[in-house]
Structures are given as C-alpha cells and as structure tokens.
Length: 286
Image (cartoon, rainbow, N blue to C red; front, side, top):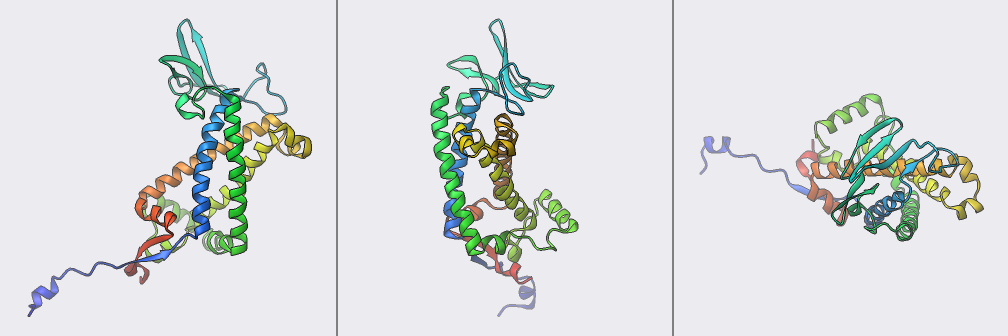
C-alpha cells in the first residue's frame, strides 16, 4: 500500500493530447498548389526581370529614362561589380545580385543562375513558365475564394471580431509573437487576430494587386481592357507594383514559414497534410 509521502510526491498526470480538424481537404489542396505556383512564379519572374533589370514609373521605361530601382553592374577592366540601387542609394552586391559566377567567371546578371528558371538566360522560356503557373495560380485562387465564400470559411475563420482588432489586443498579440508565446489549447483551435488580418491583407490586397498588375503588363490584355492602364498608371508602373507585391509575398512566406517552425513544425505540417492538429485536453479546460 502506498504511503502518504509516496502519494504526495507522485508526478501529476501528463495532459492528454486530442486531435482537432483544423483544415478542410480543399484548403489543404489549394495551399500546396499555391506553394508550387508561387515558387515557380518567383523563379521564372526573376528570369524575366533579368532581361530588363530596372523599374520605372509611368508609361515609358527606355534604358535612357531614369529608373527608381535597378539591379545592375559595372566593369573596370576584368573586374565586374554588381550593385542594387534604390533611388540614389546604391549597395554593392557582387556575387549575389548584379554580378555572379557563370561557368567560373563573374558575369553581369541581375539575379544569379541558381535562382532562375531556366538557369541560363532565356526570356521566352521564362515567360512560358511564368504564364502557365500564373494561370494555374489564378484558377486555384478562384476555387479557394469561391469555396471559402460559399462554405463560410471567411466569415467563420478569418473575419476578426470587434474585440480582436482593438489596439490593446493587437499590441498584446504582437508582444506574444515577439516573445515566441504561441496560442495553446482551446485558443489554438482558431486563428489569432494577427493571423486573420495578415491572411485577409494577402488574399484581398496583395494578390489582387499582383494579378492585376501582371495582366496590365500584357499588350493583348490591355487591348481588350484598356482601363487597366489607367488603374495602374501605365505599363511600367504596373511592372513596379508587380515587383513590390511579389517580394511582399516572399516576405510573408518567410515569416509564415518561420512561425510554422517555431510554433511546432511537425504539428503544423501534419495539420496541412492530414487536417489533424494536436492540442492538449488539459489546456482546453483552463
């Protein structure tokens, strides 16, 4: 028979894990299609940018016109120097941007060969890759948005409540994220306010801007829908907006992946593959 001392020093039982359904099948499928599309759009987009590695505002963008952004290079004898220029600010980036190694030689090239599809300079091939996965991305996004509107995903899971978007609550969540304090138990069943706002900004602002500016760069689309040029301020401005939104999405993905890893890589990956997400029963009762 156990003594009083033994009973008093017994370890508390470990909280039991339970699995909840966090992502629907269609959400998971469209998520992984987006991963494929965005990856190949980025790589082929950098290939396309290499053909004219500078950005202008307005309707014109000839080589002689002043650009507000450029990934360029300069050569002094056998020395090639790469640089990135934003306005009047220029930073040397030799070996990565502006000039990188190709077949053992430092070669003028905005984005390096290892970052583009195809790796060699081929504008036509880059456009074919880009256009194919751009339309796949658009169709996939349309399916996701239609499903989310009809099925109530936006209203149920992404629309923040009034209490969630108060300055006090948002500041509290920002501090928790900065300290790597992630929601546990019952709170982990739902997206927090920062997640909701971020996803809504990406879905309803960044992605429409990226798609709209991409369409505006097409002469064929402009012929049928000339109002796009007015909306985006010309084809060169659309190119700049496309560049900015694309890299804003890259920043979002980097932060998203970091949060996935820090908050529990296996649990998050399992939820996006099988839909099952583990939380602890003890925490849900608090």
